[in-house]
Amino acid sequence: MTIQWFPGHMAKARREVTEKLKLVDIIFELVDARIPYSSRNPMIDEIIQHKPRLVLLNKADMADREVTKQWIAFFKEKGIRALAINSQAGEGMKEIVQASHEILKEKLDRLRAKGVRPRAIRAMIVGIPNAGKSTLINRLAKKNIAKTGNTPGVTKAQQWIKVGKELELLDTPGILWPKFEDQEVGMKLAITGAIKDTLLNLQDLTVYSLRFLEKAYPERLKERYQLDNLPDDVVAIFDHIGKLRGCLMGGGLIDYDKVAELVIREIRLEKFGPLSFERPQDMQIEENNV
Image (spheres, rainbow, N blue to C red):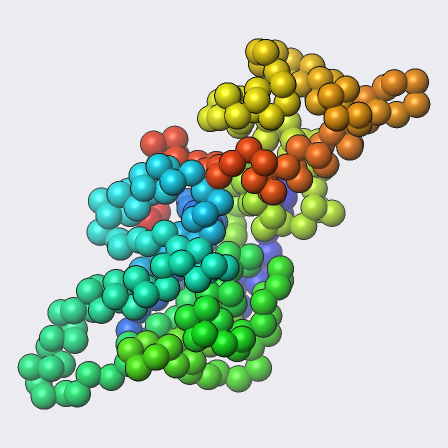
């Protein structure tokens, strides 16, 4: 299964972000807590350069809590502050403002020493589509300002959104597209719903998902589908699930498409519990790529 990326969109997003950098004090880099590496734009460091940054691991309620802690520690080792948040439920919103003040403390102290009255911190949120940018903006602002949905919205005019007296968000597109020449990154984005299912072969995605669950969460997989053991042949797992759940065609044959739809749906509905699809120690992360 080949999943493509869009260089035209990438170039436009990069240009928009670069133009607005000088207007803000800090960048909020929004990633999916279930796939913190795969849901980053690989050019983000090059684009924002030395601008202060706060990484926000959104949808943390859907991710494995222990693995999320590992990611926060990983970013800390790289000198980057990271927070686990759930913008849908509004969890972690106060910590964002507090962390921003801590990251910018030296700059704010210098301004105070010069007699400059502190103003609200100005921030811009960047992230790939579906990371939850609009939901986060609305939660921080405590009102529906940004359009939410599964596709990036169009911002017609630049505007500052006030978050209390301490923070202002620059409402620019700020959308960076994923560049996934590594097809495994594409698979992870697909599992978490960042890519439309119509673009995918769901059977391929299900094979990848089952193999992942076998390795990372074998007991959850066995419990969910009443498996005494995990057969080496993934087709045998498809067959077992098909018979167990009644995903059958005429003559009692297994309907593999229905099995695939079932497994992917149950992963997304958290029937296996919170899942993290990548861990820092499993990723071949180059030093200069974070």
